[in-house]
Length: 330
Figure (tube, rainbow, N blue to C red):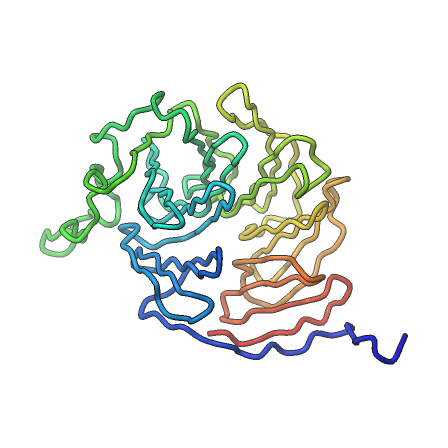
């Protein structure tokens, strides 16, 4: 090895460069065009400049905790999903709401959301084990009905009767979805895959084309509380309907997060386990423990796997080694 070749056998501990703080927990992050978007426990979306680190915006986005944020650069859209059973679609430049999507079923928390820019279809994964979808360019097919909106339905927990007959919910402080800008979209009752997993649908991503040359057509990949990773084909002629294409299983521990690196799929699981799947053969080719806490987020880049865990640490590991570098983040 030449003397000036850097030693990549181990990762150095990253230094903290800057820190921004919010009073409530931050549960989701996204980055776009020099801005950091954060979804908070109290339903806000906050925006910071990555150049000056000043807060640029703060909006009340949901009535419950924001669980996921997803950016579609080519369409200039920011998607947010939350514990209020709603998916909102924002103009990423102005943070004006363009669409608000809901199901007529009691889906509970919406853990994840993804979007096909090709078919203009939103897919959401929910607590009630379903995957549902909605076309943004076909809104005339399913006009919203106010009486079926989640804000008009009693929530089993938040609207429950407490001691003395008092209600737990405080709807006076909730957002009125019918007074906000944008189009309300009701998901068609046919656009649902019930029991997509035998557990919560925790994570999803779309794969195909340049991002994953294994698939000629765009495919949906989901991870659930049943420990299964499922690959779904999309029927473009039938409003993006799902058909099960492949199931990959390795135990029954929940699949909490997914990341794609061309033909390799990484899944983060409970108790710190990361699995690596070959999408050419649908075989598990590697399993390693990054930590002992749940791997709640995972991403791949720069020949490394990065994961965020429920113990407050972020960890990084090279593909070919088993000794992770870890940094206390919170």
